[in-house]
Length: 407
Image 1: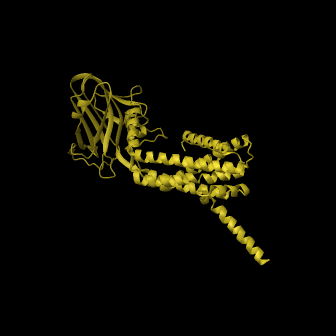
Image 2: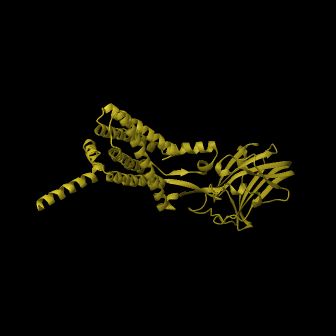
Image 3: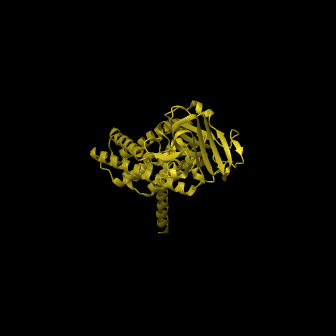
């Protein structure tokens, strides 16, 4: 009696061990594993594969984010709050010289999400100069590794039909008696009237004249444009930002990002599991194969272990081939042409990884198709051709759905 109980216990332990190792054995002995599932399907192996996929996907996503640096700006853009280019979206922030009028132009502005839906207009009648200043901003740190590295803006000279003979930028520190001065006149040589001209000025540079300023406490900006004689002047300004500081977003909230990646991994796995299983189930039954939904679901779930293998391989490739990626203001919220240029740069930086990862994806796709085909053949008894066709269709549909919803 005792020997019989011990034999039964040992058999149960062996069977439990078999179930717990199915997600590994399916990689090298799929036919045997799928026969086990056909005789006694259990959901435990799917849960193990799901957890393994979430872990591998989180590691891969974490590695990608660790190499991703996003350009910070001041003022900070908040798309959800509808706060874009604050300094050129609000005319009340500026202090003009007595001869200058300031209004907002809703018809002529730079078309990019970071630039808002308007520009700011500076105008003067029968005058030779425009002088405006923006005070009490910040203070903005433009010094050291944690400081902003550049000042960028876009200017359109509408009237007169000649460019200014002198252009100056002033950055104040504390009050208007302490400032840095930059002569923009030479940069105007390549500018044009009637179009938006882009300027990116390096900060804390020797080209700036120091008049008692402090780069760590920039508190205001002034612009001065001077013409050789009087005109009716109209100048538009847009996209005024301190920039050039790139930060890794992962360092700000590692737990939060890991949680988000894990949730995306969960949905990605479940969508593929049910889409692939559902399509295969419909086709196999249409072909005359009597298939149990539970058995098929478990088999497909086990086959999806290949996606975890893909994540592991991609993580190893990424660590060796991908340098840091820098997502600039132009990429995040610039014009169509700016985004295209920055996207091309990012694609070039990630080209080697992308090429190798694409080949890995093709191999994993083929491997997963083969495993699903074997499972279909074992469960339904249909021919190899009738078993392979549903697998291929299901995987293609699943892939397109993932692309469409961005998973």
